[in-house]
Length: 299
Image 1 (spheres, rainbow, N blue to C red):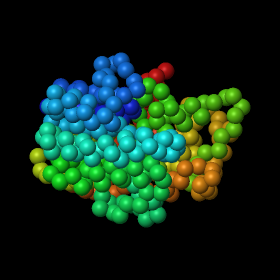
Image 2 (image 1 turned 45 degrees about the vertical axis):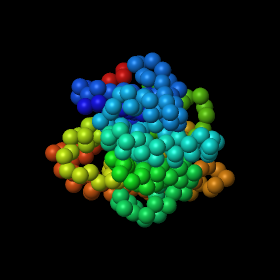
Image 3 (image 1 turned 180 degrees about the vertical axis):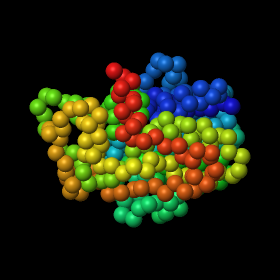
Protein backbone atom coordinates (compact mmCIF):
# COMPACT_ATOMS: atom_id res chain seq x y z
CA UNK A 1 0.00 0.00 0.00
CA UNK A 2 1.28 3.46 -0.93
CA UNK A 3 0.17 6.40 1.20
CA UNK A 4 0.69 10.16 0.97
CA UNK A 5 0.31 12.14 4.19
CA UNK A 6 0.01 15.91 3.94
CA UNK A 7 0.88 17.99 6.98
CA UNK A 8 3.12 15.14 8.08
CA UNK A 9 5.14 17.35 10.44
CA UNK A 10 2.11 18.23 12.58
CA UNK A 11 0.84 16.50 15.69
CA UNK A 12 -1.75 14.43 13.81
CA UNK A 13 0.22 14.02 10.60
CA UNK A 14 3.31 12.72 12.38
CA UNK A 15 1.20 10.20 14.33
CA UNK A 16 -0.44 9.03 11.10
CA UNK A 17 2.97 8.71 9.52
CA UNK A 18 4.29 6.57 12.37
CA UNK A 19 1.28 4.26 12.23
CA UNK A 20 1.48 3.66 8.48
CA UNK A 21 5.26 3.25 8.42
CA UNK A 22 4.98 0.68 11.21
CA UNK A 23 2.51 -1.24 9.04
CA UNK A 24 5.15 -1.48 6.30
CA UNK A 25 3.21 0.80 3.98
CA UNK A 26 5.23 2.89 1.54
CA UNK A 27 4.75 6.42 2.84
CA UNK A 28 5.40 9.81 1.27
CA UNK A 29 5.28 12.35 4.14
CA UNK A 30 4.73 15.90 2.91
CA UNK A 31 5.31 19.14 4.80
CA UNK A 32 5.61 22.81 3.91
CA UNK A 33 7.48 24.84 6.53
CA UNK A 34 9.41 22.11 8.32
CA UNK A 35 12.17 19.98 6.88
CA UNK A 36 14.31 17.10 8.08
CA UNK A 37 13.11 13.75 9.40
CA UNK A 38 12.80 12.50 5.80
CA UNK A 39 9.95 14.94 5.10
CA UNK A 40 9.37 15.99 1.50
CA UNK A 41 8.72 19.70 1.13
CA UNK A 42 5.68 20.63 -0.95
CA UNK A 43 3.40 23.64 -1.07
CA UNK A 44 0.06 21.86 -1.21
CA UNK A 45 -1.61 24.99 -2.61
CA UNK A 46 0.43 24.85 -5.85
CA UNK A 47 -1.64 22.55 -8.04
CA UNK A 48 0.97 21.84 -10.71
CA UNK A 49 3.54 20.74 -8.12
CA UNK A 50 0.95 18.64 -6.31
CA UNK A 51 -0.17 16.91 -9.48
CA UNK A 52 3.39 16.06 -10.47
CA UNK A 53 4.30 14.65 -7.05
CA UNK A 54 1.09 12.66 -6.71
CA UNK A 55 1.20 11.28 -10.28
CA UNK A 56 4.81 10.15 -9.79
CA UNK A 57 4.13 8.43 -6.46
CA UNK A 58 0.80 6.81 -7.47
CA UNK A 59 -0.76 6.59 -3.98
CA UNK A 60 -3.52 4.22 -2.96
CA UNK A 61 -4.54 6.52 -0.11
CA UNK A 62 -4.00 10.20 0.67
CA UNK A 63 -4.49 11.33 4.28
CA UNK A 64 -4.93 15.09 4.10
CA UNK A 65 -3.94 16.54 7.48
CA UNK A 66 -2.49 19.84 6.24
CA UNK A 67 -4.54 22.85 7.36
CA UNK A 68 -4.51 26.12 9.22
CA UNK A 69 -5.79 24.60 12.46
CA UNK A 70 -5.85 27.64 14.76
CA UNK A 71 -9.07 29.69 14.72
CA UNK A 72 -7.16 32.77 15.90
CA UNK A 73 -4.40 32.40 13.28
CA UNK A 74 -6.99 31.75 10.58
CA UNK A 75 -8.57 35.16 11.10
CA UNK A 76 -5.16 36.86 10.88
CA UNK A 77 -4.51 35.36 7.43
CA UNK A 78 -7.90 34.93 5.77
CA UNK A 79 -6.57 34.66 2.22
CA UNK A 80 -3.98 31.99 3.04
CA UNK A 81 -6.39 30.09 5.27
CA UNK A 82 -9.12 30.06 2.63
CA UNK A 83 -6.71 28.76 0.01
CA UNK A 84 -5.40 25.98 2.26
CA UNK A 85 -8.55 24.98 4.14
CA UNK A 86 -11.25 25.65 1.54
CA UNK A 87 -9.71 25.28 -1.91
CA UNK A 88 -7.11 22.51 -1.61
CA UNK A 89 -9.53 19.74 -0.51
CA UNK A 90 -11.66 20.12 -3.65
CA UNK A 91 -8.59 19.88 -5.86
CA UNK A 92 -7.39 16.77 -4.05
CA UNK A 93 -10.86 15.27 -4.51
CA UNK A 94 -10.61 15.82 -8.26
CA UNK A 95 -7.18 14.18 -8.22
CA UNK A 96 -8.60 11.19 -6.33
CA UNK A 97 -10.94 10.62 -9.26
CA UNK A 98 -8.26 11.08 -11.91
CA UNK A 99 -5.42 9.18 -10.20
CA UNK A 100 -7.54 6.53 -8.48
CA UNK A 101 -6.60 7.01 -4.83
CA UNK A 102 -8.90 7.30 -1.80
CA UNK A 103 -8.72 10.67 -0.07
CA UNK A 104 -9.32 11.13 3.66
CA UNK A 105 -9.89 14.78 4.51
CA UNK A 106 -9.42 15.67 8.20
CA UNK A 107 -12.14 18.14 9.13
CA UNK A 108 -13.34 19.55 12.44
CA UNK A 109 -16.20 19.61 14.93
CA UNK A 110 -16.14 23.40 14.48
CA UNK A 111 -18.33 23.05 11.39
CA UNK A 112 -21.15 22.91 13.98
CA UNK A 113 -22.46 25.75 16.14
CA UNK A 114 -22.41 23.86 19.45
CA UNK A 115 -26.05 24.52 20.35
CA UNK A 116 -27.59 21.03 19.93
CA UNK A 117 -25.11 18.21 20.49
CA UNK A 118 -24.44 15.42 19.82
CA UNK A 119 -23.95 15.94 16.08
CA UNK A 120 -24.30 13.07 13.62
CA UNK A 121 -22.48 13.09 10.26
CA UNK A 122 -25.63 14.32 8.51
CA UNK A 123 -26.48 17.06 11.03
CA UNK A 124 -26.77 20.54 9.46
CA UNK A 125 -23.53 22.49 9.71
CA UNK A 126 -23.41 26.06 10.98
CA UNK A 127 -19.87 27.18 11.83
CA UNK A 128 -19.53 30.18 14.12
CA UNK A 129 -16.03 31.32 13.17
CA UNK A 130 -13.96 31.82 10.04
CA UNK A 131 -11.88 28.71 10.65
CA UNK A 132 -14.98 26.53 10.82
CA UNK A 133 -16.40 28.15 7.71
CA UNK A 134 -13.26 27.41 5.68
CA UNK A 135 -13.21 23.80 6.83
CA UNK A 136 -16.87 23.46 5.83
CA UNK A 137 -16.03 24.91 2.43
CA UNK A 138 -13.35 22.24 2.14
CA UNK A 139 -15.97 19.61 2.88
CA UNK A 140 -18.31 21.11 0.29
CA UNK A 141 -15.55 21.06 -2.31
CA UNK A 142 -15.12 17.33 -1.76
CA UNK A 143 -18.82 16.47 -1.66
CA UNK A 144 -19.49 18.43 -4.85
CA UNK A 145 -16.75 16.63 -6.84
CA UNK A 146 -18.60 13.97 -8.76
CA UNK A 147 -16.86 10.61 -8.80
CA UNK A 148 -14.36 11.50 -6.06
CA UNK A 149 -13.13 8.65 -3.88
CA UNK A 150 -13.13 10.60 -0.65
CA UNK A 151 -14.00 10.39 3.04
CA UNK A 152 -14.45 13.35 5.37
CA UNK A 153 -13.31 12.59 8.92
CA UNK A 154 -14.39 15.16 11.51
CA UNK A 155 -12.38 15.27 14.72
CA UNK A 156 -12.35 17.56 17.79
CA UNK A 157 -9.45 19.14 19.67
CA UNK A 158 -6.34 16.94 19.53
CA UNK A 159 -3.46 15.97 21.80
CA UNK A 160 -0.59 13.52 21.77
CA UNK A 161 3.18 13.33 21.25
CA UNK A 162 4.42 16.61 19.78
CA UNK A 163 7.80 18.20 18.97
CA UNK A 164 6.63 21.33 20.83
CA UNK A 165 3.77 21.77 23.27
CA UNK A 166 2.64 24.78 21.24
CA UNK A 167 1.85 22.42 18.35
CA UNK A 168 -1.34 21.36 20.19
CA UNK A 169 -3.99 23.48 21.89
CA UNK A 170 -4.08 20.82 24.63
CA UNK A 171 -0.36 20.17 25.04
CA UNK A 172 0.36 23.89 25.36
CA UNK A 173 -1.69 23.96 28.58
CA UNK A 174 1.16 22.02 30.21
CA UNK A 175 3.38 25.06 29.79
CA UNK A 176 0.76 27.27 31.41
CA UNK A 177 0.27 24.91 34.36
CA UNK A 178 4.04 24.77 34.94
CA UNK A 179 4.63 28.52 34.53
CA UNK A 180 6.15 29.87 37.74
CA UNK A 181 6.93 33.35 36.40
CA UNK A 182 4.18 34.99 38.45
CA UNK A 183 1.96 35.51 35.41
CA UNK A 184 -1.78 35.04 35.95
CA UNK A 185 -3.96 33.24 33.39
CA UNK A 186 -7.68 33.32 32.73
CA UNK A 187 -8.74 29.95 31.30
CA UNK A 188 -11.89 29.07 29.41
CA UNK A 189 -14.37 27.16 31.58
CA UNK A 190 -17.28 27.65 29.15
CA UNK A 191 -16.74 25.51 26.06
CA UNK A 192 -16.98 21.74 26.52
CA UNK A 193 -14.37 19.87 24.50
CA UNK A 194 -13.66 16.22 23.84
CA UNK A 195 -9.87 15.88 23.60
CA UNK A 196 -8.86 13.09 21.26
CA UNK A 197 -5.52 11.33 21.05
CA UNK A 198 -3.82 11.52 17.65
CA UNK A 199 -2.44 8.00 18.12
CA UNK A 200 -6.03 6.71 18.34
CA UNK A 201 -6.95 8.54 15.14
CA UNK A 202 -3.85 7.26 13.34
CA UNK A 203 -4.63 3.67 14.32
CA UNK A 204 -8.22 4.14 13.20
CA UNK A 205 -7.10 5.44 9.80
CA UNK A 206 -4.86 2.43 9.36
CA UNK A 207 -7.79 0.13 10.10
CA UNK A 208 -9.99 2.16 7.75
CA UNK A 209 -7.76 1.26 4.80
CA UNK A 210 -8.61 -2.39 5.43
CA UNK A 211 -12.40 -1.93 5.32
CA UNK A 212 -13.88 -3.82 2.38
CA UNK A 213 -17.46 -2.53 2.65
CA UNK A 214 -18.43 0.90 1.27
CA UNK A 215 -17.25 3.67 3.61
CA UNK A 216 -19.67 6.54 4.38
CA UNK A 217 -18.76 9.90 2.88
CA UNK A 218 -18.63 11.54 6.32
CA UNK A 219 -17.41 9.93 9.55
CA UNK A 220 -16.85 11.21 13.08
CA UNK A 221 -14.04 10.21 15.43
CA UNK A 222 -13.91 11.63 18.93
CA UNK A 223 -12.91 11.03 22.50
CA UNK A 224 -15.92 10.76 24.81
CA UNK A 225 -14.63 12.50 27.97
CA UNK A 226 -15.89 16.10 28.32
CA UNK A 227 -13.52 18.78 29.62
CA UNK A 228 -13.23 22.54 29.59
CA UNK A 229 -9.75 23.92 29.13
CA UNK A 230 -9.72 24.91 32.80
CA UNK A 231 -10.58 21.33 33.81
CA UNK A 232 -7.73 20.07 31.63
CA UNK A 233 -5.38 22.39 33.50
CA UNK A 234 -6.60 20.87 36.77
CA UNK A 235 -5.82 17.38 35.45
CA UNK A 236 -2.31 18.44 34.46
CA UNK A 237 -1.71 20.11 37.83
CA UNK A 238 -2.83 16.91 39.58
CA UNK A 239 -0.54 14.69 37.50
CA UNK A 240 2.44 17.01 37.89
CA UNK A 241 1.79 17.70 41.56
CA UNK A 242 1.98 21.48 41.14
CA UNK A 243 -0.32 24.32 42.29
CA UNK A 244 -2.75 25.92 39.86
CA UNK A 245 -3.70 29.09 41.75
CA UNK A 246 -2.23 31.23 38.94
CA UNK A 247 -4.99 29.99 36.62
CA UNK A 248 -8.49 31.40 37.04
CA UNK A 249 -11.60 29.91 35.39
CA UNK A 250 -13.87 31.96 33.16
CA UNK A 251 -17.28 30.33 32.68
CA UNK A 252 -18.66 33.13 30.53
CA UNK A 253 -19.11 32.82 26.79
CA UNK A 254 -16.35 34.85 25.10
CA UNK A 255 -17.50 38.00 23.36
CA UNK A 256 -16.43 38.73 19.81
CA UNK A 257 -14.22 41.51 21.15
CA UNK A 258 -12.41 39.22 23.57
CA UNK A 259 -11.66 36.20 21.41
CA UNK A 260 -12.53 34.27 18.28
CA UNK A 261 -16.06 32.91 18.68
CA UNK A 262 -16.05 29.27 19.74
CA UNK A 263 -19.05 26.95 20.04
CA UNK A 264 -20.26 25.75 23.44
CA UNK A 265 -20.48 21.98 22.87
CA UNK A 266 -19.79 20.26 19.55
CA UNK A 267 -19.90 16.67 20.75
CA UNK A 268 -19.64 14.34 17.75
CA UNK A 269 -21.89 11.29 17.45
CA UNK A 270 -19.59 8.42 16.48
CA UNK A 271 -22.19 5.66 16.07
CA UNK A 272 -21.78 5.47 12.29
CA UNK A 273 -18.03 5.04 12.73
CA UNK A 274 -18.55 2.32 15.34
CA UNK A 275 -20.84 0.48 12.90
CA UNK A 276 -17.86 -0.12 10.62
CA UNK A 277 -17.35 -3.15 12.86
CA UNK A 278 -13.84 -2.83 14.29
CA UNK A 279 -13.10 -5.52 16.86
CA UNK A 280 -12.16 -3.10 19.65
CA UNK A 281 -14.54 -0.31 18.66
CA UNK A 282 -12.88 3.09 18.50
CA UNK A 283 -10.27 1.93 21.05
CA UNK A 284 -10.03 5.32 22.76
CA UNK A 285 -7.34 6.37 25.21
CA UNK A 286 -8.39 7.66 28.63
CA UNK A 287 -7.21 11.26 28.90
CA UNK A 288 -5.78 11.35 32.42
CA UNK A 289 -4.35 7.85 32.20
CA UNK A 290 -2.58 8.55 28.90
CA UNK A 291 -1.07 11.79 30.15
CA UNK A 292 0.05 10.19 33.42
CA UNK A 293 1.91 7.49 31.53
CA UNK A 294 3.24 9.86 28.86
CA UNK A 295 4.65 12.42 31.29
CA UNK A 296 6.19 9.64 33.38
CA UNK A 297 7.92 8.31 30.27
CA UNK A 298 9.50 11.73 29.65
CA UNK A 299 11.14 11.91 33.09
